[in-house]
Image (cartoon, rainbow over all chains, first blue to last red; front, side):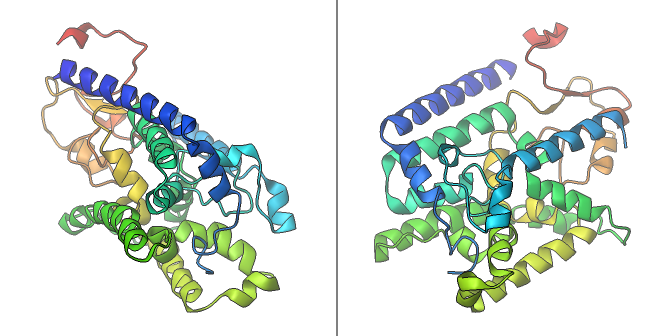
Length: 47
Length: 284
């Protein structure tokens, strides 16, 4: 049981690192920044 | 308040201050536009809040899904995976300012709604919110109409209304002029949740928060959190009675790792996960 949890943990960790790295390389950070630095009227219930 | 709870409260307050470090934004009624805004924070915190210095992971996830940008989608999913795999729902118990607000509201003396089969059933609603409003609806709307609609933020999220909407709408100006029916509805939702939190412990987190639902999927495998040693547990049920969340066992998907149950366990079967301490039974 503990071994299975450890395996799942490392698989998820690896997946997280790969996703994050690939996302940054594909401009994910910049795209997130572009969305987040403008006021989203829909998000705050105004638009 | 115990020593541990005091420590937890301090971390919650520190996080709330850290997420809202752009104090100038509240004064100038504008938002932070620095590089930090591209980094997702672990807790639910609207990036259109004047104080926000990071990006909301749920808002970013909806934008990534509806904008069909693979880079953004992988970036946000990678961030969420890492938060989840390290902390699980410990994020809810320690790093979410809206969770802190609800806990403080619940301290107001009043009759409290005890957990029951109804609250346990309601705790499943957050998974529907995650699947429906955060994933499916933004995806369907973007495919069908080609528009990016962060459905959860737009129709349900009380955090954006409180942190962003109220900050910009109160005090007049162009934002106040743009408010309409939707803003009224969102204010109503916010009021229900704020008043509800006085009577029901963490009403939004337990029943509606899609971020909590997402982190719940990682709780069993996360590096930090709380765990029950099944070989020691006598199933007396004291932990379940003490816990204010709808848990079955400490460390399950509803557990926010507050640790309140640890000192109440008569056989010391509950402990904090600590990857840096080697235990005798670790080879089991």
